[in-house]
Image (cartoon, rainbow, N blue to C red; front, side):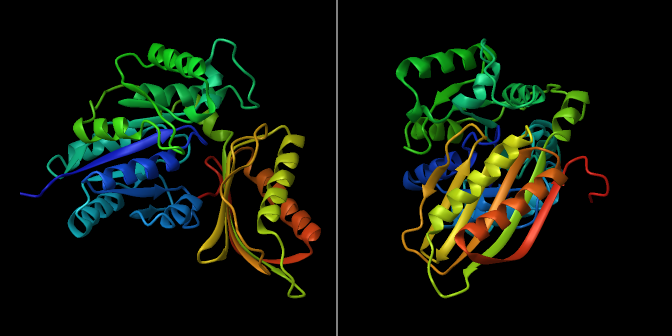
Length: 366
């Protein structure tokens, strides 16, 4: 009989901290006698910042690119079998891209029906963060996001077996209790945990729960594929680019300043067009052991550096991922203009190796 390993999906709104949470959970499980691994899933091709960054942790990470795992069942099963048989992994966790909705029906129920004896389905985990939760607070804070995004957040919470409030390191005790009260009122009969994935607070309690329980395999209708879902998807686009930056005279430049300036130019141009970027990620490499990872969680937020480049270099390899509430053609134009502008400011040349920009409803998209 085949030994079953556990599989779970980690969902949540763009910028909630899914990747950081998966890394923290994987590290905890590995350090406490278990073995966990991650799958980095993306709609675009294999230029995923999360996968590149996770690689630097030394943890096991597998990419599934070119579409959501909701529609790549056989690919997902092949990866899970390999991790089980070759690496003896006990728990595999995968994020899902895009709207973060649909994993219950299109992943969990499908695996349960088609492969009932191979995989044990751990609780579907939804990561939330304080800023995005403000969309459903009584005061309805304005976050420069269309109201369609509220549907996505609510749908994610309805699908969840477990909900986690992330980034509590940014909150006071009173604020933590306020957000937990909100989640408990919205997610009735669903366990709610509070963590800081960044500071590794509360990770053990969540990990122990995930390793001990299974998904309830709820049967619910969140309107996947319906009018609200389609309207939300229409407003989103995906942008991925990989490029190389080099000085023309052999001089060096500050890679962190280059990244920050580039992001600020993108922020300004997006704001001028009354659009938003729920998540922008940049991974830049000076050499194998010296790299930076930076994020922007919306046009109203500060740039966050998970790691900075230590030295100055005469060249830089850069990967950019953007998940935008913006038409794809406009997003592509903004990114091209921003790269030209930052290159001129830093007096560098660039060579583009890969670019893709698309919306889910774009005509002609395959």
